[in-house]
Image (spheres, rainbow, N blue to C red):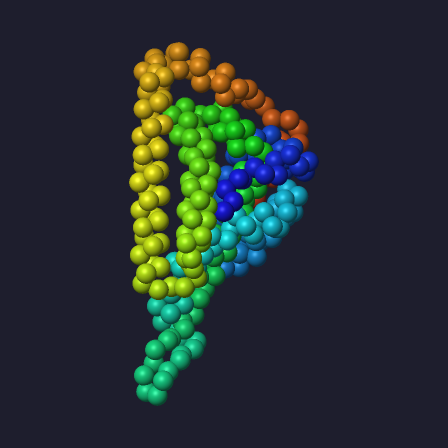
Length: 270
């Protein structure tokens, strides 16, 4: 299970050279515009923009494939039934004798295509955003744009302990396999084991979160006044206030915002 988003942050590409603050605004505006697209004829434009940005980032295809695999399974589980339950225009039926057990509907297929395309585009842009600079640098950019110090700390802690949770999952998986467990056999016994593993991970993560919280409280976290908190938080993150981006970043930001406004404007006008 791979959770590391900034594995290729050392590459040298146009997206990597983009200033983090303006990149956050530019790619964020594109994601918002993609989320608002509802016209099917705009989907090829959205996917083309996504492919161009990903190609410019020089991130390998394996990075995209491995990070979108599990979210893709979740999406398919959510939208899989749409072609069979949504809509009125029937384009196909499967029956046994006089009993129809599956009906394929046009509106459901189009809705599934729209949701899946927007999901892939938004997740790909999100991977480019977090994969072209270190995670700490991205948090610094968010802080310089006004993110709350508490939210920044919680985000860093969550990202930090995702790796701990992944390590625990690997340890439990190895222990189960050494005892002869075969996860691909979907039996009632295996389902009970899966439920026990999930419960164990939930209890362990809760206990670990309590330990981290108590350790932070013992070190004075949350008891420092606002001025001291600013003095401590600002240098620790190493935030540099960059009001004006460089020329390349300004051009990239302008292009991204223009594309986002064009998509939103086309959607509203039509």
